[in-house]
Image (cartoon, rainbow, N blue to C red):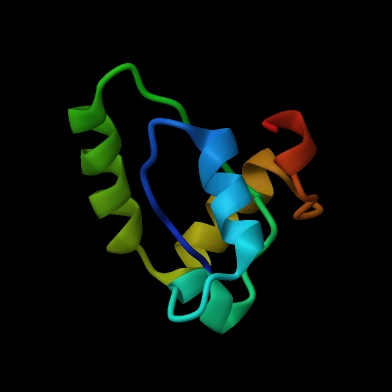
Length: 81
């Protein structure tokens, strides 16, 4: 399983884009259609800093973060569409 970490100013739009599976995109290549974790920030600068931090984490540390907030890795998309 692959994790996608990204920043957007419109989560519902980004989720719809990921569902499209546009050829040549990272999400299409790995069939990433499930939202299991999300954070919100008031500033894009803080969001980008957090994105960079998370991308530097080990896979296990990312799994631990997700499990803390979403123990069953449920798909959270319906909450944000």
